[in-house]
Amino acid sequence: MNRRPSSLFARIATLLAVTVGLCFVLSIVAIRITSDEGAGRVGIRGATARIVVADTLIASGKEAGLAEIHVIRAPTAPAGREPVLLVVRRTLEDIRQAFPGREVRIDGMHDATLWIAAPAPATGWLGVPVTNTGKPAVRAGLLAIALGGVLIVLLAGLYARSITAPLRQLADSAAHMVNGSEPPSLPDGVARELTELRSALARAAADVRASARERDLMLAALSHDMRTPLARLRLGLELSPVTDPALRGGMEADIDALDSLCEHFIAFARDGRDEATGDVDLSAIVHDVAAVASAHGEVWTLRLPDTPIIQGKALTLRRAVENLVRNASRHGAAPFEATIEVSATEIMTTVIDHGSGVPEALLPHLGQPFFRGNAARSDATGSGLGLASVRRTAIQHGGELHLRNLPEGGFAATLVLPRGDPRTQAGFVGLRVPCERRLPAM
Image 1 (cartoon, rainbow, N blue to C red):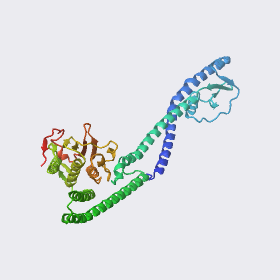
Image 2 (cartoon, rainbow, N blue to C red):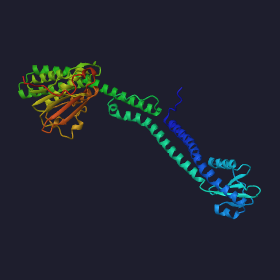
Image 3 (cartoon, rainbow, N blue to C red):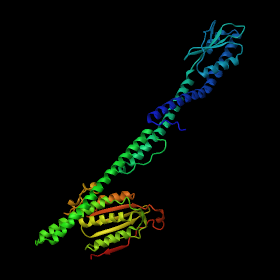
């Protein structure tokens, strides 16, 4: 059964508790490690040697020499204390083993003195100052702090990564979630707060999708219903006695503009999400769409390689290419070009016109629903949904829409699609040599 704390607060509290416990254990281990070395320095190497020399001086009657080796002779000794540090306890044990039968005590803290009973038949006590007894403890403390700091950094880094990685996933998908895409799935075992955040974002994305779908359906329904009275108006105009060519032409143009707007609304609502995915030949689609445009008096130059088959929605991609071609025809100027470039990972379909381009300040807004930048390019009317539909199609296929002005003048729209089907990779890597065709106006 998984006992891991689920909330972020509980996990942080557990992390702190575990870290403090591990630091305590590391401190004990560090003291034991440094105590082994300190025992050799403080115990046998120093005190034992001076006690042996002091015993020799007392036995030879030369007690005056005790001062020269810094040994104190006293009739009594302090009561002493029980050492706290392991290094001191080991020193006392080593001294008792080196001088069996003689009582050993220690007194003082930083300036400690080791007391040992004088050798028989002498009486009294010998005091041996023990200096720097705190060094092992200091080293142990510093080592424990260093190890504890490294441990805290490692644990905090790992835990911070477990929090920031899911947040990074959500942040990277934020732009798509704003448009209604489902947020990415989070790894198992993430904090409850992150799971709740992901659920809230999923609900918000679902609301955005539902709202957009309702709006699209409303636009489609209104546009569909408007086409019936528009057809009656067109028929009435044909049967009317209006003889002024200018007036009749204006009325026909208005009806055509309204009908075109209805067509854009319906196309935008019919976003292709319910269309089945299959094999798509982009070169064939671009050629067919340009051929239709050429039939209306436009001259198109095509540079189309033998494009690999990709997996996509054929009708939706065809509408996207039609929108790009229609956008160039309505808002740009001849000559018109359509090119396809193929790399190892992408297929780039570019439609170019040589009109006046778009003001740089408007470029970031192109492709947004109902934003019309045509006033800068022509006097044509539009719904602002053509490029928005293309951008949405690109996103549906995991691609992008790039819009830019050309340095020599004109405008280029590039539909970038990934080559998602591995079966189509072989034989097309690095294919960039286009075949050029020119479709004359008909």
